[in-house]
Length: 435
Image 1: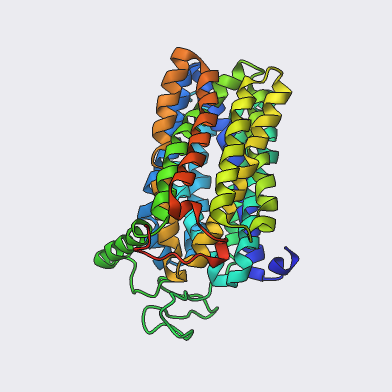
Image 2: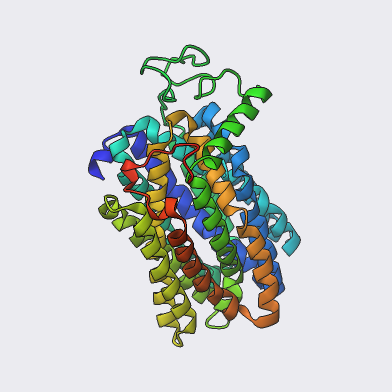
């Protein structure tokens, strides 16, 4: 980690990631609880989950833009826009005009803006680091993400109980401003798309006085070129469709349906065992599990990724089901957190697999297509889960996630190209090699 932080660009990108993740954690807890508090109906929580998670299915549209636009401007612009938009909720509360419909209107717009951020950060890493540093870098980024979640989900739950959800929206404005300031200091080198000999690109990259590119990082000319954008988009889809990643997406979409249902139902489930504070604890347990998984992922990078993933999914499913079946809330929270340790491991290693196996100039679009395709079922799951929770109660809906995770393990066993995946640094994403 210390060697990575000696890279100034990585240090600033990492710090910005940490700050914005803290803000996102506080916002998500506040927004989901505010919707449930205003309505006392899990169906509205499901709608909120649908509107928040739905834009992730559109992330593939932003990947080609991320690969072509100046990454620093993308990161700064999205943080600034989100900071302004999040002010709408506390202003409405001050004017006595706050309603659940206003909160539901703000949530998808914020989420849509956020879809630029993670592909941009994924595209930035291979430009500023060597391939053999990517697993450690992704572990660090995942630690920042999950670590911030673990701390600030719990803090958010406590603050919601003490000060109210609206107050947390004001705190979120500050985090967006700090993150934007950090991202503004980045200096991004030109893209290496795997087709050049390491020199400068022939067209489309004009250096400014401080060494940044004045046009798209991808070196394709103006980003408004519609035909080039569509070609970039098709290229990202083709890489995904023609490789083993297509099977990864199919399994992820299946289990993400259950994940969407779980997290949309979590406020109602928490309300049965302790209210806003319990919701914060469960959200923190989820993040803490992912945090620990990200922490140990680099120690497991040399193991065959296919067999490791099967084991991780099977263990996660058993612990997830046990969490809901457990009686005392502390046991439930502990098992729920442990269930996501294996998930954290797989997430970090999969990100490194894509970054190491895909040419640098394609990472943004492939990452965004992968994210969109795997997340497309999540908002549907949120909507269905919220509706079901109103009929059968929240506990059965949350518990179903464990069964879905166990089924994912069986799916990876049944697909040879997944089961036989080698260690991540030995994988080459080869379109046409899906057999």
